[in-house]
Image (cartoon, rainbow, N blue to C red):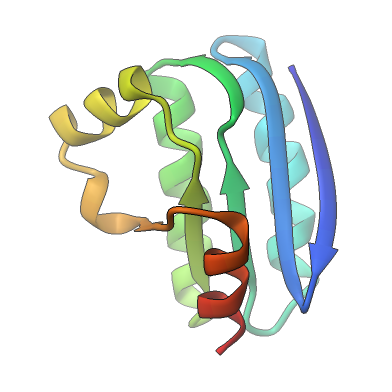
Length: 113
């Protein structure tokens, strides 16, 4: 798994690619953690467009990031969540913990406010 990181209007946009399972979960944590620590009030958008699978440890890493962002009064949004990932998030009752957006433009606009 690789994660492209870029910024737009003060929003950190993470674009993981591949499967968020096994050892790639640590890679995701290593990509997200510095982004959270770098800001007083982090605003993070995760684009799942190129993620084809995620397991419970991947969800745990995302929840850990969400908790760390919430402690700093920040926000986490997600876009392009596949049906498989959405089903897993809904089944695990984590869906309400993330802000869902229809497009990157919508997300950047809302998270910038």
